[in-house]
Image (cartoon, rainbow, N blue to C red; front, side, top):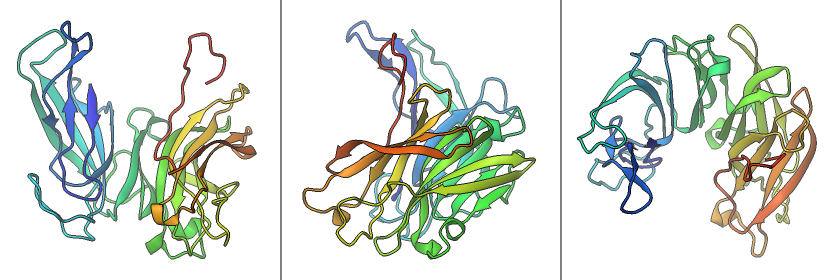
Length: 315
């Protein structure tokens, strides 16, 4: 089934499309009508997982909240510029529509947790390796920096890294977390990588690696390699790592970081594309090589990695 977040900077309705199996008439997949999940608001990301405190037939769905920039009313309502939507954890269950059936879908959702200290998210994820062994930790990135909520979640995060901690010379009002990927850092740690964004006048914008060092204890480091926009004559613009992925690019058994980089149109220079980079990591999770794998005219928002062919040895 397909879960879709919506809104980001305005009010919209996230929804689910249930996979009803093959469509013999079209040769494709037959989808249900859109089924709303969560209240209308602005949301930046969605992810689903299993939770021990939910019924066996229910899923937990995380919606990462956004912030309002476009207050124009629509069928779902309107918002006030500068306000933010909280991240939500929903209990979602569906009855009555299975693959190969034509019956109606009955979807029910309830809010089981919400972020009470929201400042505008840009990404969110469920991190099982950072949880209690059963339930995942909730990782949120955005204007408030990086926050990790471990079970039983609650009001205050287990770990917080404000933007000014990673970038002590930058006011956190103009700095935020962007891209997010959860997984192993090197061979010894579990954690995640976060991309950051700054304004033209306030570089640098590093990748930040965060890993768990013990019970409710975290540490972090920054990676600045190759993040300067290479077309900037003033050398003052850093690319935004808006999307991140992990894959073992060189076959050494260690996950490496791939980043999709983006700049606002006003920051682009004529004829100078935006570099898309990867970093090969060592056992400690530090880069041993950083290189550009692609140049894109307008930059990129997201990235993923996998095997294109069954006999591929590398992604």
